[in-house]
Amino acid sequence: MGNLNLYQALEIWFGGQQENQDAKYQEAEKYLRLRIRPAMEILLEEEDTERMQCLEEQGWFGRKELDGFIHSASEKEKLRSLIWLLHLKNEKYGYTGKDFSL
Image (cartoon, rainbow, N blue to C red; front, side, top):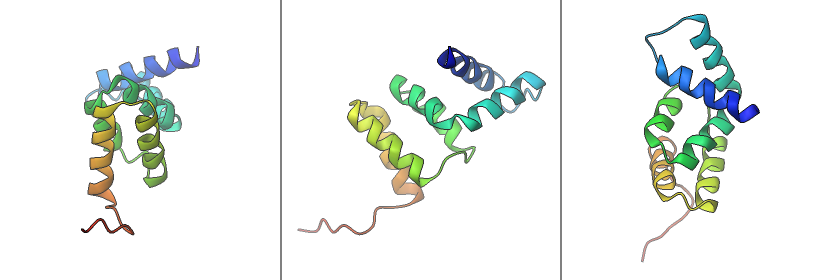
């Protein structure tokens, strides 16, 4: 039942993004903001990187959550999601502390 609500919130939010500021849209946005990890997990599983990008642009998660999404994509062998997440991490935070020179 919880996932059903999450799926509904995703559909409402993506269906009215930026144009529809009615109460239903705002409620969906609040719901997603509080449940960004499971929302991103759904999109990661579906390898919907376009919608993942939309959520990322909201600033609702940080480096710690991003690292968790990368780990999850790797474990689930979701290559498209993994590549997108790794690229995002490189853009936002870079990779430091490791030297891969030959």
